[in-house]
Image 1 (cartoon, rainbow, N blue to C red):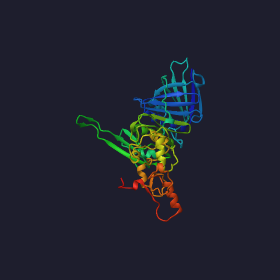
Image 2 (cartoon, rainbow, N blue to C red):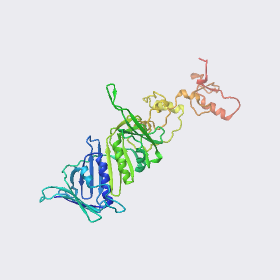
Image 3 (tube, one colour):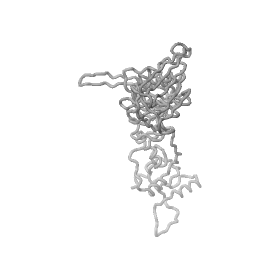
Image 4 (cartoon, rainbow, N blue to C red):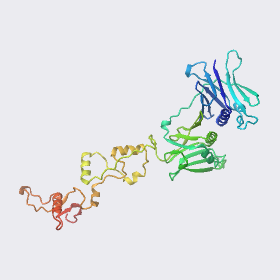
Length: 428
């Protein structure tokens, strides 16, 4: 035998009415899960693409709360399901009136009749009105096994938060005939776009529905927080989104969204005063920015210190030590246009190359653009007039770059008899 008794003040009873109106837009039946410390309303739509869980805290939301499940001990629970319309007929819209006029209640008492000596099980609601009138409602319920949708917020690195009243103003622009809602970051990088639309339906040569689209661009400064990958389009049902925003506006609280990529679930979360609301929706859409989205949140940027520009000698030595390293196929200006900031591909390339630079390492052909006095150990051509050579191994040409720089430093008279090989033309 289960024991379930709780009491609602008029303000709390009015909130129960509002949440039932919201759940009625998802499903015709609502499931109830009662535990020792909380009471939860859940709903799952017919296509199993939207799940709602609204949890009432036993200590904060109720003036008195007692739940003793028949089995399971401290972790036990009592579950059942009822018609959403039946509950709405009990929890009407004018349960709370600050002026105390007719129709308002003094308190609401709820209990479950589940005893062996009773012929029927009932969900009993007693409304105590201000004039001393008590209205009693006995509702039939069905024992069911309540399931919950799982959502991992650690993997949902795309997030944004906005006040529900601001979002309530934006959804007023959506046409009632639209069916889908596309949420993405604007091209300017400073706005978020909420585009409600409907696609045309054709049957042969006849068009049964004309396409309709309404886009609302919201500046990111209107958000409390906004972190979304560019090029990510997440699509949900516009009616579900409207129902969530309208209910969040009744609580005058912030609306938070969590999602990762299209075809993965999206979750809206909000709550206040002991009421926590979570809606998990399936999504579709497109990710034009990258085939593999980043698993690292966009707030965590990876920075590397700039490397000094290598000399031609260092470049040659590096190639001798690592001859297996392939040369880049395309210039950096072309490959950089295909990179996505924060993607796994770019992070791996930065770790392999030791730098996140967009430029390719300097080659020998680029050395001809160096200034004459640049610290470069390139082979130079000079005339051997030192007479410090072995007659048996006499060499006409040799590397005199260091000697030429020494002579130039000691005397500024004339030009040192040195010259780069790349500057000599017509001798061979």
